[in-house]
Image 1 (cartoon, rainbow, N blue to C red):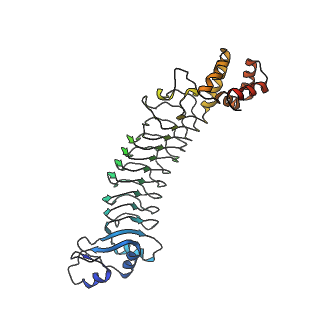
Image 2: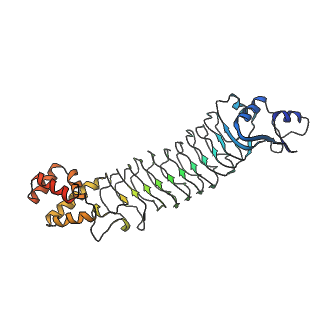
Image 3: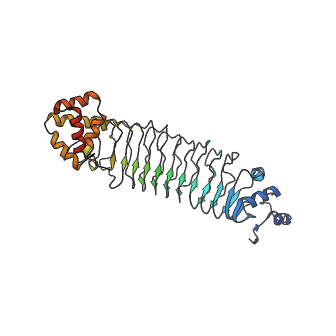
Length: 370
């Protein structure tokens, strides 16, 4: 790129102009020039004589294997504007953002560095922001109010989401962090929200007001309550947590055509289930829960089905129940039988005056297993 009156395009041109008024320009070493030449992709770099910063008409992809990268820190020379992507990953010596660009045209990534805070974060990023695997990141204060793409904080060690942007136009991920709640998370997420695999998460307080995509808060073994959850524009997965009930769901909570999965929790009853998920005209048993609401592999799956079988036997409606299973869940009674212990199975057999083989054969036929 041809240099204009305020810019120099190379180390050598900079040295040739040393006698001019270059008070704002850094003393660049040949090693630093080599590092920049190796790191700038699909374009060129130049020193802005007004700001003393390095502007890049292209992208930056710096690697710590380049021996000359320490020259940036030693000479305290930072970036100004980068027209394309900026990737500065796996630099263990990068502890702060003071030398990072003020403006990035597309994506910004500093993953796997030792950055401790977001102070001096770029003023403007045109695309995605990747802050993943920042093992020493203690605060999000300094992030912009709005992110134009995705914001990835997965595997970073943040303990609080305070300081997050108010709006993330793409997806927002805090997967495998150390947060205890969602306080400080964006008010609006344009795509998906991923906060799963967080062993320290104990509350959904601070749940985003708007999530236009799906939500995944699975594998949070200390999360016991659904309080504060809100509707989203896609499916919600909260599998393998420690949820014990459905209390806390808003009365108007509705997934429409999207799934709500609560597999492998400790839910023991349907108290708190929204009307949208249960056909109350037919009954209050788990077999009348709509297909989009997945409570499989919860204690309720066994206890409610067993009680339903016993109740219908006692009232003499077991034959009608088999017919009902055709329209709701053809395998429900046989599934219940398979989860019963020996005592419950014997109770059913006694009430029906059937032997075991006869009952199993009838169950399979009526439940369309064969």
